[in-house]
Length: 174
Image 1 (cartoon, rainbow, N blue to C red):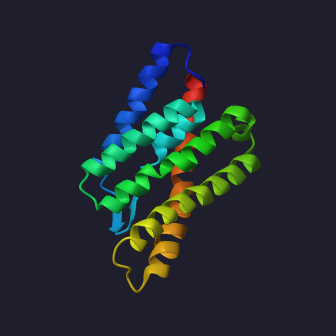
Image 2: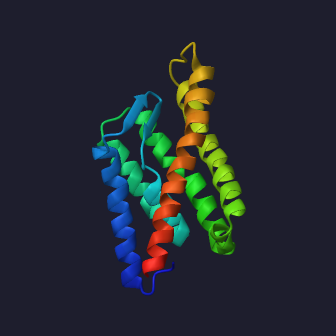
């Protein structure tokens, strides 16, 4: 589903960016155990943008980062949101070259899992950088690799499935 005009591209980008900003602010289903936070559907706008365009993805990630900053959550969570530039860009450029990935159930699940690993790597890397420049908690291994790493893989895959469901439904009515 590619935008037919520049106006449609700008409108979709604005809508997804607004969604990415609002979700961290108002979503009632949220688990926060710093530096981890899991807000249901917080990646959906990013994934939808990824299915459409790399540029749209970057803009939506920046919007999402602004949303997490405005939500008043700890700053590390905002930095983790900014790390979405890594998985978002990689995923968007891959889908631009291989759009058929979303048409195959097997390819989609493999793509989803690999993207979730890249996503988790980015978020864990941000946390490692943050903790090596500040106080290092005794349970850092559990926090970084259990809560943030494994939690991000699961959260990312769930949000991808939600986004793919929405994307498929929108493609049918277009």
